[in-house]
Length: 305
Image 1 (cartoon, rainbow, N blue to C red):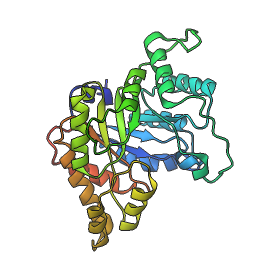
Image 2 (cartoon, one colour):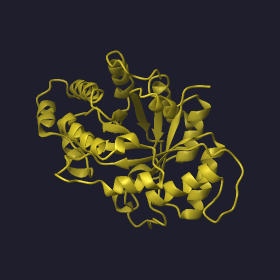
Image 3 (spheres, rainbow, N blue to C red):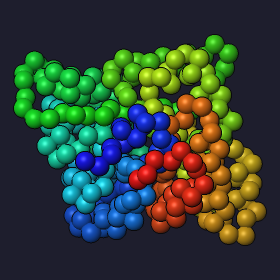
């Protein structure tokens, strides 16, 4: 049986996950054009759920297609669009499709999308969705107490935003997610290894790195303009001004962005408590396979994909 993402994290191997946004299309070839270049390189591939509050090929269908192709998916489930009945049905569908890794998210506000008058649901929040999935995994029961058949061998994830922790900082939200069943975290973009070092040091002091595997979000920047947009528009993203300046003066910004990202990944591989990285490359999917190949050649504790 292939080694899973959870197995690699348990073995303390440094893992690399990547991300694909399903197409605004019913043609699976468009999804596979993004995902297949990551096969054998990324340890798992996230499938987003109506990213940007816009319609896309469904996340569960997309994750199932990846399973068919021998790619281990991380299914993102957002609380924005579906009530608890639909989300519980999604958990059954994920299990039936062979999808184990789940990342529970709130979801972008509809006002950010192309149909801003759409009604958000938010019947559950990510913590209550985590708790529902954990109950299914551990007891085979829905919240009503009804027993359901099947194998719910879920590996449960949540999100967080790395910060430079002030004195005495306690991550109450993160602890609540652990209490609800989170086993791994994939974070927002943080392109500052110093911030990550201090963030992880504080989490280690509190004993949280023994309870969760932390994958730090990184990005191969495309341009100084896109770097500024991420810094200013994406809540919790950390992009130092020095990196933006470096991109501004680069003769080949996309190549420079890939070099910066590779350097950050190498630095993060030496930070205590960092279990791996999660590469997100909005509008720059083609850069990710080469980036992973580059870092795989230079990090000793990388898990074999």
